[in-house]
Each structure stands twice: as structure tokens, then as C-alpha cells.
Image 1 (cartoon, rainbow, N blue to C red):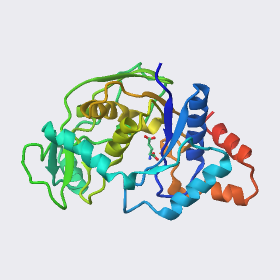
Image 2: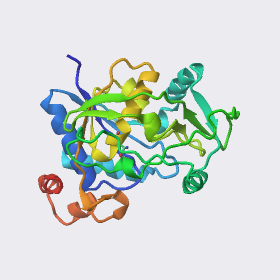
Image 3: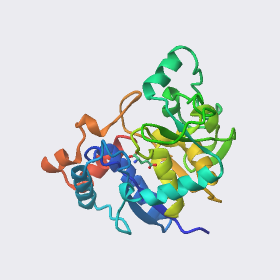
Amino acid sequence: MRDIISRFAPAPTGFLHLGHVVNAACVWRETRARGGRVLLRIEDHDRQRSRREYEAEILDDLAWLGFAADEPPVRQSERGDIYEGALDRLRRDGRVYACGCSRAEMERAALKGCVTDRLSTAPAGTVAQPFRAADSERRYPGTCRDRGLTEGPGLGLRVRLDDTVERFVDLRHGPQEQRPSAQCGDLLVKDRDGNWTYQFAATVDDFVQGVTLVVRGDDLLASTGRQIQLARLLGRDEPPQFLHHPLIMKSVGQKLSKSDGDSGIRELRAAGWTSEQVIAHALSLIA
Ligand code: GLU
């Protein structure tokens, strides 16, 4: 039996909202039920959007809610050496290439019909309920794959993926099959502004921190196959277990976002709610 280590991994790009509370409640509940430990990871890989003020408020709200991690928090912005080391390994394997494509160029290519893949992530019948993330996902068509660009400022970095089918058993949805190279194409690991991407930083951290249980929302179900593949390329023998829980939806297809400002824990605290009421209310919204 592996030790159970999970994590709560908020991005400090806004205040804590009810969607985070659902996630935290699921992380702590599922982990404690298995006798495991919870790590707290501040996912501030996006240097332009992350703010220390948000981080401080998130930590304060979490403490108020009673979600206590078992180790001091780590910040992705302080883990650059770890990511460089992981990238070096992929580079040695000939997997890394520089990419000059901007989001706008990729949008234009898609409009011209160069990018046609808009795939669902699992064959019909393998998921218990519909999920959305993959529907709006665009596949990187591989424009720079064989251009041999020299790495440098203003260029992103991508990792060549193999055309594999990744199979895993989600603890809630059951057996899943995903084909990352067809879903998203070669993975961006560093963007053109020099930021590590979520997919890369989270995968490296889950590996290096020994995370064995990932509990997160259904919006990330479609990312799991690519994270499993990337972790294997980084030398991980056994992927974590995954559990994807329902999201709070404002209306059909519209995920609650912290920038909405209408579900802030700050506001509920100020209005006199107790932490128990906030958690119960958040969970009632997905029930
Ligand atoms: N920082 C990510 C988020 O806030 C966490 C994703 C994950 O749990 O893998 O959505």
C-alpha cells in the first residue's frame, strides 16, 4: 500500500470562492478517509496574474474554514530549479522544442481549418456524466515541431508527446481512456512570457512531492491523460490515483470563477456566516 499524499493547489489569481471550498472539502475528506496527508501548494506559476495579496487572503480563509495542511505551503514561483531539472531530462531525451506560435496565430490557423480536432476525451459510455473541458479545447497542430528554432526569449517550449492512449480509473467516474496527442498536441511547458505552464508545473510537483492522490474538479478530467503521460516521460513509474468531483455551475456550461466576485468567502465571512455554514452551502451546490 502506498502512503496517501494529496494536495490542495490554489492559484493566487483571485480570492477564495465557493468552488475552492468544494475542492478543499473533497480533498480533506477523501484524504483523511484514507488516513493520508494533505499538502498545500500555491500555484503561482503565472507571474503576471498571481498576487501575494491573494495568496495571503486565501491562506487566511483556509485557516478560518479549518482546512489545515500537514506541511508548510510551497510556492511554484520558488521551484524554478526543480522545473529546470525536469525540463533538462526531457531535453536530453530530445523531447523539447522551441515554439514561436502565439495564441492568436493558433486561433487563425483553426479558423482556416488547419485545426480540426475537437475531441471528447473518453469513448461513449466510459464516463458517468458529461464534462466540458475538452469540448472547447484546441489541438496544437505541431507547426514548430520540426522547425528547429533556437530556444530564446519570446519563444515558448513544448514537449513532444507520443501518440499513446492513456488509461486510468477515476475513483468517481470509473475507467477512462484519453489520447493526449490527439486532444491537445505537444504540450506547452513554458509560455512565451517565460512562465511555466500549469500542466508542466503541476505534473512535476505531483511527482517530486510524492503526491499519490489527486482530488480536483471535473474541469481537469481532460488533463489527466496528458499529465500521466508527461509524468511517465519524467520517470514516474506509477501515476497518482485521481478523483474528479462535480463543479458548482452558475448556469449550464458556465464554471464558477473567482473573478466573478459573487461567491467570495470574504463576503460571506463579513456577512456573519460560520465556516460550517459556508462549507455546507458550497457542498449543497453540487449535490
Ligand atoms: N491550480 C489549479 C487550479 O486552481 C489546481 C489544479 C489541480 O488540482 O491540478 O485549478
